[in-house]
Amino acid sequence: MSQEPESTSSWASTPAIRKTMLGNRSRDTAPELLVRRAVHAMGLRYRVAFRPEPDLRRTADLVFTRAHVAVFIDGCYWHGCPEHYIEPKRNVDYWRPKIARNRARDEETTAALTERGWRVLRFWSHEDPVTVAAEIRRAVLGNAQ
Image (cartoon, rainbow, N blue to C red; front, side, top):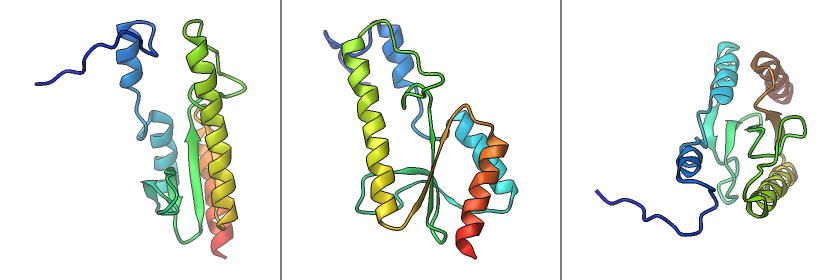
């Protein structure tokens, strides 16, 4: 069994923090699952962790291919929620640009998909899943009519 060698300079300030951060999921997060269940209960069907445009290296959390709706559920920490993001006290020189790059990539993704005819919906992970699902439903059914 091979193990990853310990790096002398890591983005994580301690081995415990590194382990926690590496364990964070990129899909199937608790907020995402709650929204998916609510949307599914409304009778809508979607693709999960899917590229709306195959040649664009961006993956949306939920994709409604026929309606051309791409949904992103952004985590408050990773995407810099203006309401909940708290800058870390350690390794600020790493994390500040990292979060800024994530925000810039989110904006680029929204612009690129919009240019290609997609309706992009972005929600924060702290938003009420039932309210989010209702907004998704309106977007999907509004585009289908």
